[in-house]
Length: 388
Image (cartoon, rainbow, N blue to C red; front, side, top):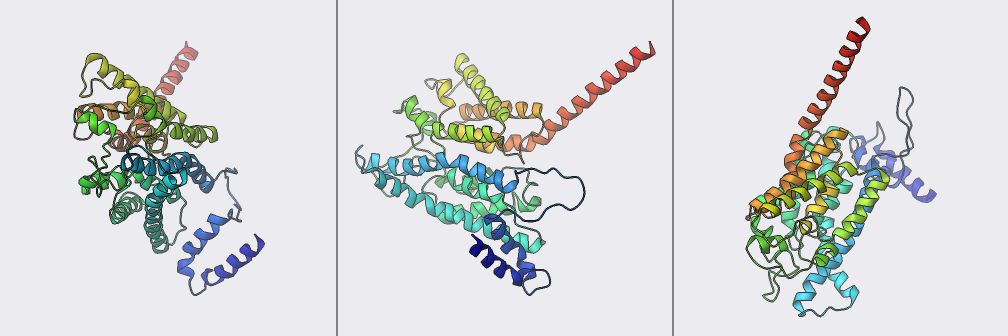
């Protein structure tokens, strides 16, 4: 490690203040802080001193994403071979490697394009590169169809980073979740590659024997579903790269909650809001998918992944404790409402979270004002009691 440290120090010299490549210092500093904890400390003023920094937080989220990603890689190969070979699977590694061969290029493109833009903006603005894209760059390919053309993925990343993030000032300033913006852009710009029965299974578009319609898509079209609730929970179903396994997502949720990185209030309230909404619609018969139980709504589609990894984004979510509960309940409500009443778009979690991203500051505003008004009333009442 000392050898690597010395080499990095040598590489940094031309980028130091007053040197030839000073303007490009953010790029080399990003590599340094990625490999090592920054060695500078505060000299004056009041600061919170803690072992947790942005890099550690982002790494924790990446670790929480790994179970869903690894299962998504396997399921990518599983969905391909289970249909291509009439239910006969090759050895485990062949299945896994097929999924890896399809998904790894998506991850590489996402990081290469996104980090390239982040580095360019950091050099232009003269500030350091933030670690925020460490998570976003992994999330974007994880919520896309496995056969999305790489150039479409790249364009979606460009839109997400430039319009959804850098236009607002960079990491910590964005209003909307950048990963969801990438998916929304791809959905509206390239609808044929983001919906239908061919895009969710590897090479389904080039093989007539493969058809990979999602469960929600089939139900919205009045078709029967051949998958059991256990298949949905474990994730052996067609869908976006890493959104299918509720079990893997729950493991990630436990990691986020245990480390304090993810808000359990948003997760729990989101599930409650979705469950009550689906149960209500099932009870009164207002649904386009009458035979789909309300419990299955929680374990199919992108709901679980969205409520755990997207809705809890600390930048775009509500900040107050009460606001988080309201925010989560409304996400669950709108997700189920869109899913049930809009057969053209049976998956509603993306639009639901983006809508609530826009409303999160308003929710916090009313929560804070409500607290202030209650304290004013208590103070006024206390003054009246003293005067009496």
